[in-house]
Image (cartoon, rainbow, N blue to C red):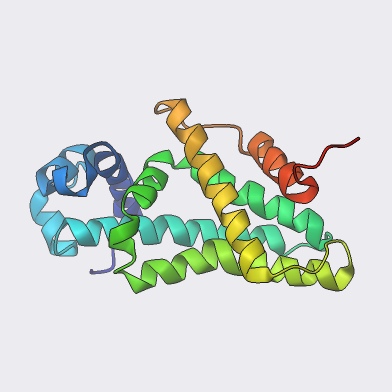
Length: 197
């Protein structure tokens, strides 16, 4: 893929809606042209085909999510507080771009064959959580846990909670109140399912 301008990058983000609605197999370059307003010849100049457009969309969203995650954890707050900030940042990224999130879930099998996308998921979701779990054990605001298991649990909680609300939203943007959902996820993660009695 050739480098693209910021304006074209913004225009191309609209292509996620086509992939979300039609799936990868049902999406055509012509449909991408219609929704983005980018001429077909220009699309083919920058992208070899629709798989490269899909890769661009996912990388672009994951890069923006990773930047928001890095900002959320770069404060002086406790690791426990930063973990809540991180979950809110990740859910905000999902709420503000629901179509790309739907594509991410729908195309998980295809993504497994795109190692740079898997790496971007690590940067946006797994590594920031792992860092905060280690920081929290060190500053004693969180207990020491199996980092791989806890990171996977939090990833699942964020992704599935976000997608559940995206489906309920029916094309609204933002799709849900990320702060509210993050608070619910963090309450469950931090306090579990045990009775308060």
